[in-house]
Length: 346
Image (cartoon, rainbow, N blue to C red; front, side, top):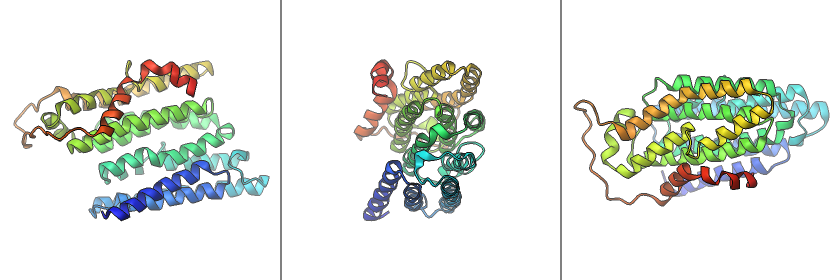
């Protein structure tokens, strides 16, 4: 892609995200979401492969429907209450429609079908943007409207997302699809706590974004897209593969890695809210996704191919590891000891 064009699209993404998260008026928030959608489409379809075009089409149709629902929800609220302010969303029907719209934008169950397909059809760097930056505006809208949302509905969506995200990722061999189902599962953890402690949702999202960025950029460095190529990629950059193993275990939420922190805090908060059953259920369901993280980690660093593979052994690269990857993997692995300091900030 032309560097000038890429710069325009990335700048538009940043602009759309900034407009949405900083707006008070529903029309401005909707405008930011539309700019975001239009800016990401060329990045998804830049390879001109039929699968990329299909992914861009699916993404456009889903996001257009979700944006229309956001507009419909805000107009219904304005009609009934006379308020266009995002924080003044009080009408029950508007809250229900908005929850459905944001669930569609994020890829929460039962509106999740588009996300794995779109991620599979996109390049790794675009997949990273879809999994992190593109999730920020909808989560910001949820954060601003959280006092008005229906806790029972969000808890149901969250538990279903964690269950399906773990269950559907078990049988996948394509790494981008596995990461898509991982994202759906993590969104369940964010959705269950948004009504009770919105700041915890933001903390969870930030840490998830860092861990996912570390994994996507590592895979982009080693040019790995499937489990079979991941098995043969250990020779290319052994130290990077070791960090990939730790980043995957961190994303799974195993102590003493960074990913354990948000899960621990969310379970603690749910228990305080007398939701011990929901906390137990979501913790047990996250064991499903733990299985495919362990399988990825196993393929990344522990096994050699058990038979004569069709893949040639990769030459070890002398290319230095990107500083961004080094910083992100360090944060992904080593943030738990400073949890008290993070909590004072949050």
